[in-house]
Length: 81
Image (cartoon, rainbow, N blue to C red):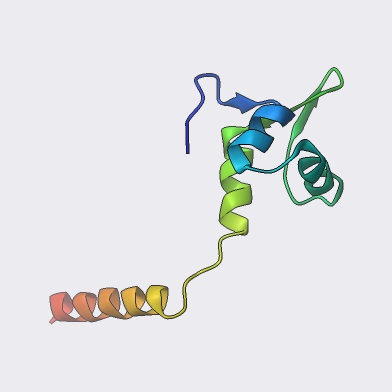
């Protein structure tokens, strides 16, 4: 993901970054799925808005995160002995 210099996206910029059309982005806004700011009638998105949206919509791989969690717990048990 590209970090923008000013850390704000227009609707067109964000739609392009996400690989969706502006109408799909409008639907996400209307359904409250993505946060935004409105300044003088202009809708803008912060880098944080984008990162939170992506994080909320992340789908974990089966077993991968569980295996990592188990490994970390095992290592912590070894260290505490």
